[in-house]
Amino acid sequence: MGKIIFYEDRNFQGRSYETSSDCADMSSYLSRCHSCRVESGCFMVYDRTNYMGNQFFVRRGEYSDYQRMGMSDCIRSCRTIPMHRGQFRMKIYERENFGGQMHELMDDCDNMMDRYRMNDCQSCHVMDGHWLMYEQPQYRGRMMYLKPGEYRSFSQMGMSGTSGGEGTISLESRKLQRLQAVHQEVEMNGTTSPWGLSFLSSNVERQVLRKDLEYPLFLKALNKMPNISSRYL
Image 1: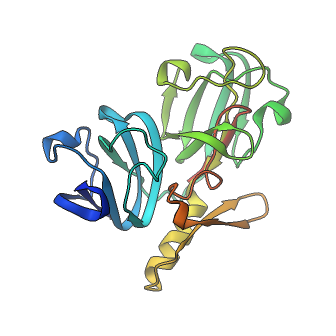
Image 2: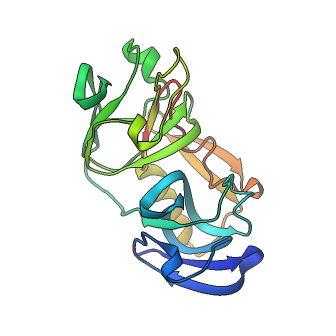
């Protein structure tokens, strides 16, 4: 089970709130949240309540300033990411409400538009596993955490893709499993790495990101959208 500690002010100052579970509204515990420290596990943090707004992936480490994480507003909600050891399956659709072309993913995809010759990607159905989707190809841009369930409209979820024309949503997906596995290894060995690690599941190639950027090892570790790409966690 993971553990994360939130602080009212930057640099872990002010009142704090510790949790190992989802929190839909941080204001119930803190008037504001400008920094956090992940003791164990992996989490998604959001700049709006009820798991809305911009999303950021955080794993074991210190995040001293929400603005350095790329957030324009303070942390307002958080969600735990459970470890998943089974298979990964997700169906992506060209149109909202599961319309148009359909393709099934079982692995990372760094550019859905190119791989499947889709003009757009507006909805999906996650059957198994936990995924991150990105706004741009090669796991770049804003991200969105997807757990098993139906997602009928990416635009209504705040993802408004740009590549391929006005109003187009191009996503990339990535499984979260490998990232979690490495994170778990680091924790088991009792070491805290100053680097963010991400993986391309096709060849298990490691990509090392500078943690001092404090962009929850994501800007490359788990990207999503403009030319849709996806990754599992």
